[in-house]
Amino acid sequence: MALYQILADFKRPSSEKELTESFSRLAPHFIYGGYINVRDVYRVYICTVEFYFHDEKERANPIKDFIMYHRNRPEKGIVVPYFPLMTLHAHVSGFDITFENEEQGYRASALIREYSVFDVNNNRFLELKKNNRDDRSTYLYDYLNGFSLAGDSGVRWVDEERFPRKSLLQGRRCRVCAYWETGNPQEPYRKIDGVPDDRPWSFKLNDDICLPTD
Image (cartoon, rainbow, N blue to C red; front, side, top):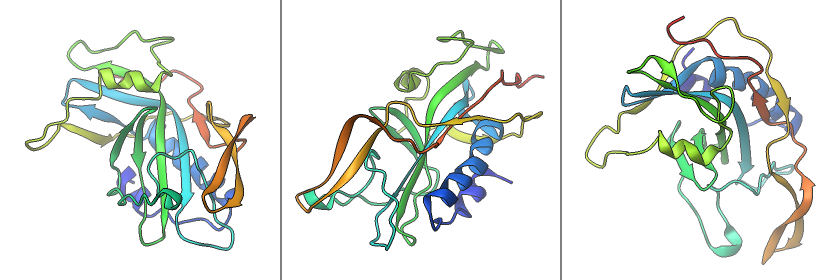
């Protein structure tokens, strides 16, 4: 099934446990299910994906992720529109593939934490930081950039199932601190410095990806 449809079918879970299970099912589709085609020059393969999720609606047991960039900040009077499904969201930590839902009232995204870049013209992977991978998310700007203001940007997701699949390493997200809710409307949340967010929403490829020509 295409990644777009899989994300379109995503439903808000009833608990963090259920959400974690949903992310574990989504992760292989990002890592083994295709790549980002950049104007037929580069193919960006995701090697590690980190998920983010934040409830905007008032609920009995909301799931909050205050580190998310694209969310409302009522205490500051900031309300941002919902992105269309599978929007590529560039920010200071890299690139997200978003799957927000206004009707269900949540923000959700998949951060490309680690990636490999395939050079189409030379039929090889670029030699990046380590084992042809780079975990410096912002360096993806070097390849995933140059969006046209006059039509199609030439950047698109291509569904391409790769086999054999292997289990992914699951753990907590990189450099994400825990937050606590203060109960103060003027400052509703505060970061707990030095305390990591333990939610296991990171999924890492544990082997080399297959060359597209294999």
